Amino acid sequence: MPAMPIETRTDTVVVADGSFAAHVALPERGEGPGILLLQEIFGVAPYIIAVAERLAAMGYVVVAPGAHPGIIFSRQELPALRVDLFLDGEEEDEAGIMDNLAEAAETARRRGWALVICHPRPETLAALQTMLPRLTDYGLRFVTVPALFAALDASDPAPPPPRRTGPH
Image (cartoon, rainbow, N blue to C red; front, side, top):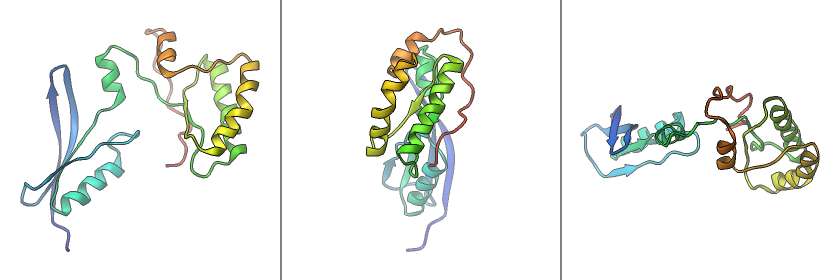
């Protein structure tokens, strides 16, 4: 089946406590069955837009709302943080993950905190099991994101952009 021409736009969706942007992809005829395309951790990034456009070319009306955490947090008057490091990209082995943990520890020592994320993969869990006691011995504490938010002073400047986000 040949792809249909599509139309794309960004709409602003107004809700009771604010608004957010939504990527809209329409088939040529401007109507059709609807799909609500939810984003992943990276927001309405090029991949989500490409999926929306492919679905619209098949005849669907697609809306991908941009519920970015920064928007949610600002509405709740909470700070937004950026991830400093992604511990375990798809090609990382246990040694690489341990190196990434050491890099995160250096960021935490220098700045006073670091925000890292990871998958619950066997290599990641093994590296964490090995490194967490060592890092705790160096005076580093591991806390949840809400605990980190609570500990940070609201007047702190925004953290610098992440140095490495891992392959994706």
